Length: 211
Image: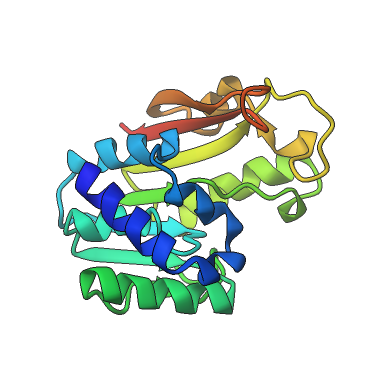
């Protein structure tokens, strides 16, 4: 893990001009990486490298880099922003020699996939839905569009976050009960990745394993 962190930190520090397009990636210039990143790394180390992986909202590829570093073969990382996806493509090639991983597309996009692993982290937006039920339905739609993968790594704004916040409105804040109802036939493990007021919001990462 430390070797990849050093690689990402060095790359980001030497390409600071690119971070204007994805300012959240500045956290990967720090000595301590986000908790969710370290948990995702640890979880992925135990999976078969031939697993078919879909990542939604990959940004500049800071999580995609884990998949490349661990030598996963089948990776599809979706990023709808053209500028960001182009930079992510360049980064994955320059760091790992990998091409054809980053897709400049929305997800879902009308296609049906057959993934073993679905990753949705650091990717919560209030404008994707108008109500809590719409947002919950979207989280389920991601899962169904990916082919009901065995593993779903999903990070959400936690319902314990009660501050008024236009960026992360109340209707996208989910509880463990919400997740359990959404995936009733799954084994679910969770980790708190951010906690307000130490952090700007509270977030929880769920590992949802289909049984």
